[in-house]
Image (cartoon, rainbow, N blue to C red):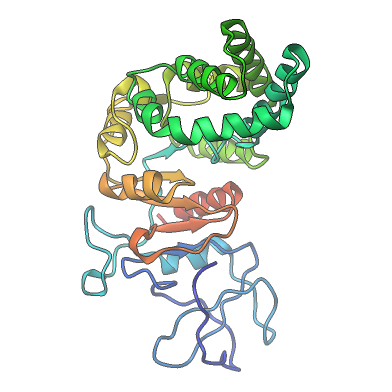
Length: 333
């Protein structure tokens, strides 16, 4: 997933877990491996560990969390991610709290496309318009309008419904219909379709079960307007799941601003020490968490390459892997 393998051949001796930095990020990164991972020794100057899910040379499996714990390096807050700044850090320890992103981390983002498509179909049927034309108009309007409304929504200066209404109003006008009734109809249809399509990723319940069993406080940290994000929590039945909720539109600061993370920690009476944050965004989640002095866990569900300039402390491809790391951190503490 973006890190090249060492050109050296694995040794023919018994596989063994290695200490050190995994990957090319100077400040250090852990990639969680699947359970049963074996870590063959690499030869050559880099001695970069090679992870594989298959048996090699008759080696015994090493639990994934042990691989991660032995390889983790934790950067200091604000430390530059350059080779000169790379230093060994203490092993990953059980977090005092877990901060977690909402959209595309817990909540599958597929509802947005479904809501747009369904609304265009409903408008076409009810107002004698072409669905394809509406879809094109919406896309063009949102691309142009997004820079104007997204940040104000995130900072609580505009609510999500107002931004949605203006988007559909302009899209309909672009498609040849300047009708306020149609705009209101579009808003209602969009909200109803999106709400019915909200889905948590399948690995979310397992993560919540792990944090509950380990008695780790969980705080939601999300960018978005209050009305939209609160509606998601109600529709998903997550109102009582979190120990605290920090929505940018309610606080007036948005990721990657460290102020949102600090506000979230204040709500549970904690500071940044030994706190993890998990999210899918390299800039907002990883960059913001590192700036706030947290352990930045990047949820990379799609296998994107890891850029050196926005290096997470830990990379996982699922929340199930994060659960394994949490359990492993408790065993190692």
